[in-house]
Length: 454
Image (cartoon, rainbow, N blue to C red):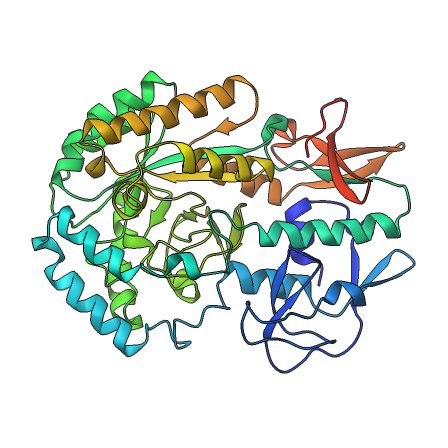
């Protein structure tokens, strides 16, 4: 019941006691929890709709407090997991395979893709994605449903505890309001040859990034190439196996390929993984021998595989930490939306940092070869550097975010002599925050600071 909430806030368990108001339904469906949070799963009251666009029952009305225990008509942990693991998506048949027609189209496309220039590919993809603006759930351009569910729960708990603030371990190290990572997927030879220039560009703004390398792709991977990335303080991760779009097409193929992928993790000294084209099947992730993954979009309207985790925060998929892709990819921005301005990325950054989340960018060296694209990317780097100088964002490598989030997941709060203290390795970087209610809204304040963090 309360596991996901405790993992998210790292608050004392005694302050977050949940119980069910009745037996959960046999069927899953959509319902609301407050005005802005759409849930998917089972419930013990009301009704469950078949589509997110239907009239939805508001389960918030059935939440009651019994002393300091919050009684709910659903399990928050189950509902949040359903969203993060994309169990609401009807695209797959439950076995990780795309529906037959969709799979046939995808196979045909990837058969001829190596022969197609970007000028042709973008038109085919625009046709394939032409209905993206009609998708109402997840919410585009950034969906924070998971965070809204947690804040609605926090409101109910704060009311149950009267005027007492609820302490928790702040989301980011040293009290940083939010976090950002920049990642580069190296797809083909032109992109590989541009990597040195791209590192120069990132370094000019004091930003380090990660490079996802295709192990058996269309370009040679020399030790000198890998060593240059490492020696310059950038990160190397594994990007699929050969970028043919078939990694998750069936379980047998995936298991055969993942053995080689895991070997490349050791060869590259990598900690992270990203699949080609953000194809994914989270039920198979236990076979990946990686510390973290970066293949799940926040809202996949412009991705080949629709869906999205509806969260701007890292979360665990078994032993693997997911760092979701929370912003629009450069390819989609440049070639699908035909935009070369910073407006969309700035808007997404504002929404993500407003929720204290992780802003995760995918920028391909293959698509930065034109001056127009480089100018747009430079504007992004300059904007991020400005936010950092203002103390509004922590710009980190993915491996550093992984290390921090794993350390935070093992920390706890203990009360000693009337004060809360953080316990656990890495606690010197952690900060205590307090959640209070002001005019019905949750406000976060860092301990020993006048800064209001929400």
